[in-house]
Image (tube, rainbow, N blue to C red):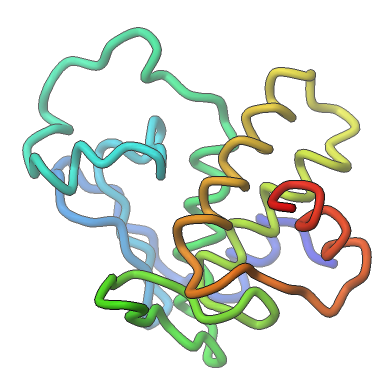
Length: 163
């Protein structure tokens, strides 16, 4: 298993750090990250409803932990890999994932959060809890059906998080 850094170096050749509010994206070896990258939170729908939300002052609670930027990097870097299936549409909702095994960026972000929650030996309890909350959110909202995984350890954690 590679570190996140080694994985980024292998698949991403260029990182655009922008000052705008446009969507974060990955593809063709390039990561494009907006100015909210360091405080990005998948649970926030503010940017979906207000494209200028990132220009407004942050509330103090908006300064999330490092795991948010890490799982966003993992998510977008997946789109640079040649076997990335991309996102799909389920029940009329876009930006979803059909599967966890070999899935798109949502699958990779979810797996990163699952491992931090369960095996983050250097992470304090509040980080592990944040990883758990975010993993549950992604697993429940970004997949076409309850995700399953061929790795029994991963499946046991998924079953624990969303019985």
